[in-house]
Image 1 (cartoon, one colour):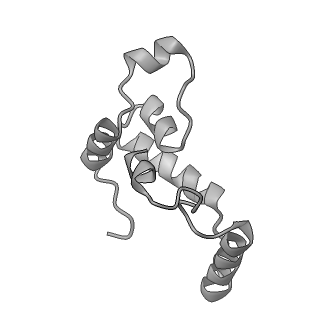
Image 2: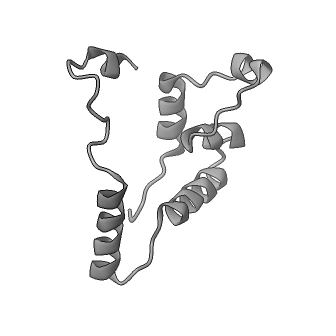
Length: 97
């Protein structure tokens, strides 16, 4: 939020490409690698790996953009970016290492 507020042009998108460009990038990747990978496949892989590394489900959900809306859940679990970064770094998830 701090970053977005600091920008001069508030109408500019955070990620400067639209859905068509996004789809085109995934299609090109599939053509080059002959591997069918979708954002859903990557999300499922990420969730499975983080779970195997012992990360609690509530934080895995937060990494995937699913933060509870209930007052109880929001006030008793720290979903701050700093906390999520510490949890992610502690998990030491590595791909192709």
